[in-house]
Length: 311
Ligand code: G3H
Ligand code: 13P
Ligand code: ZN
Image (cartoon, rainbow, N blue to C red):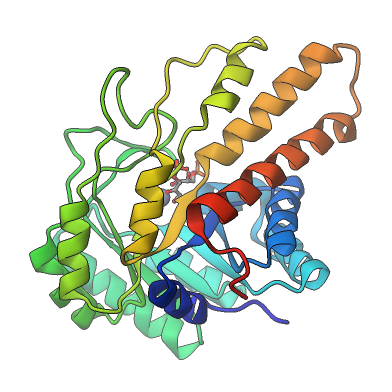
């Protein structure tokens, strides 16, 4: 099976009240951990690549690794550019075989965002790829851009119909209080999301797939593992799983997860070195890291996303 777009998965997810996991990938072990979990649970998948990941590993390596995963597992996998920041980057990913791209014009004015997104949609659609746009601005760190809480802004539901109809986007990322990275809420702060905004957006765009970025739960077990093995992470609070389940049961069809993968991998490797200080064969510490990713993703698929047995 070749790489697929997210069109079919989103249709099923919307109608079934579940969501597809969109996991960020940078290397072979991360790709294998995620795809092995999805294969065992018969779950569709979106693997996404940020511009930073593409610079780190090179387009061709990630492309071939994901193609290998498709061949190895037989899964329907959509390969997506995460947070594309220019027409040229989106074009290069579409030309290079990605089946989906995000053009993130959320920092631009409404009109500029529409113009840039519309151009990307036109290019991608002519070549069979789909496009995710964004309205509203999440706080947190993505690539080298750090958006402070003051500069973040919720999506304005009154803008979504015009944005979708004038751009032709296939899905829309919205800002309802999630943020990128491991520090989403301050210690002592009660996590809260603006489900009223999601509801209003869904009412205005019936049947249209909504995307939730910054959706890691910042799993405490891995933060603890990092800190018990020489790390020094401040208290980190993520998005509670029940909120993600609620979003998935509504119009959210794509849930983006990166930080939880990083924490699982780093926690496991730190523990490995603490337990085995004399080891230096990368396979020895990458093997348990890959297994931890697999286990964590399997749990997300079956208990948070609900995408198991949906192929
Ligand atoms: O939203 C951003 C993702 O977590 C990707 O992060 O740009 O550091 O690869 P990155
Ligand atoms: P997290 O940092 O919460 O994992 O968000 C990832 C993301 O939104 C990628 O686009
Ligand atoms: Zn994101």
